[in-house]
Length: 104
Image 1 (cartoon, helix red, strand yellow):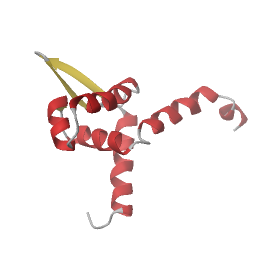
Image 2 (tube, helix red, strand yellow):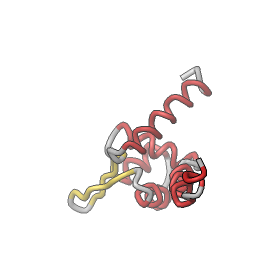
Image 3 (cartoon, helix red, strand yellow):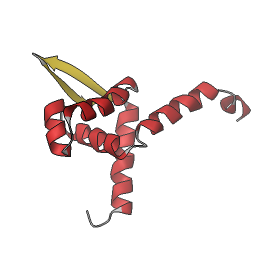
């Protein structure tokens, strides 16, 4: 236990990932991108937000490794990363929504 507790950087990594999902908009974007690949314009339309606002939220999600992107011509398409962290966070979001929002 003491050895694990002394690895502060590991706990910082976990905190950084959870920090990304401390924002409702980022959770909505991440959840959407777990289900499909979309460009900023489509995400903006679905969330009824401006493209710059969506881009502002995509940047930290991408930097944390939760989402990835690919270029197709002039458009960037985003989707959830195929990583254990992304899959686990997606499952957590889905399960918490089922518990906290049973009417869904």
